[in-house]
Amino acid sequence: MVKENNLKTQFLKLVKIDSPSNAEAAIMHYLAQWFRSRGWKPTFDDAGKKIGGEAGNLIVKIPGNVKNVPTILLNAHVDTVITGKGVKPRITRGVVFSDGTTALGADDKAGVAAILEVLHYLKTNHVPHGDILVVLSVAEEIGLKGAKALDIKKLKADFGYVLDGGKANVIYNQAPFQNNIEAHIFGRAAHAGTHPEKGISAIKVAAEAIAKMRLGRIDFETTANIGLIKGGTATNIVAELVEIKGEARSRNFVKLNRQTQSICRALSRACSLHGAKYQCKVNLAYRAFEIEPGETVFKVAEAAARKLKMKPVARPTGGGSDANIFNAAGIPCVILGLGARNLHSNREKIALKDLTKGGTLLLQIVKEVVNWTDFLKKR
Image (cartoon, rainbow, N blue to C red; front, side, top):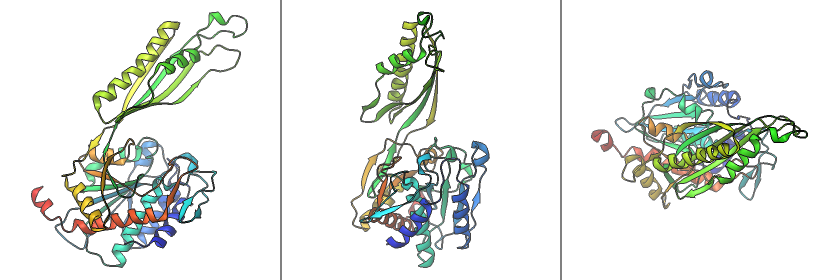
């Protein structure tokens, strides 16, 4: 198994390097040096230029020492939410926290640390393994932008594993579609003290529309949220414009569209009632995926878990990840958790035993792939 102390050291180094989305240059410099110092040749694509960020995705092929076995893709994202800057990690009873003023950045530097430690273990212990394609992506937290900018046709891998949030014994084999919804409500400005009746408050219209929307948990595979609202110019002016941004997610495309339409319909009705106008733009952010337990990518992970006496559990996730992009492009991928909890908050934490458990499972998966030569024959 991988060594907990090595993983801890690597993880703590990573979380201390600021890397909010689109500002990943410093951590990519560190990672490039890490790979080069071990004789591997990392390259960067032009994702940074495409999306307005500091750095592209890091891609490196780790040549195998066993031929005629599947090539696997290993992925984690290096960016964090904006509150993951200036992290001061603390360890209490084997659990890593921030100092409470920032997020920790275990999402997804735990994944990056696990991949690095597995590769280090393979090299130093001369473990038999096939070719490994490592993709460390940028800008995942702001809409999977780094993965979307990849030239995936150039990524030669048979299947892969995305290291991200979740429990260490869970194989996440389903993830939802997501629609992004952006709406503008156009009211009419007026003096709020002398003749408010001549105005149409876009804020009031928006409030009434949102109050009529079904939001939160809709059913077992569908969610919806209004996350941003902005409008108005001054307290003495009836608000003329409000901007709303939200989302709908579902693993069922019909339900996704039904929920999206209901949000837009609530806006339409509120605007009609008050004489306001609106625009509603909908964009499919990413497609859902579902990996059946009989597919090789799942069976390899399951076999590896059982060899470690872990009870593998298949479970859907409500979140999107780079796995959505890889699956849509024809590279079957599942998501492996590493035990990070309370993601995107200042209460984020990860137990070192869970990080080690997840890293050890990844190592065993890499070892297990050597036994799946039949996969290439059936391909």
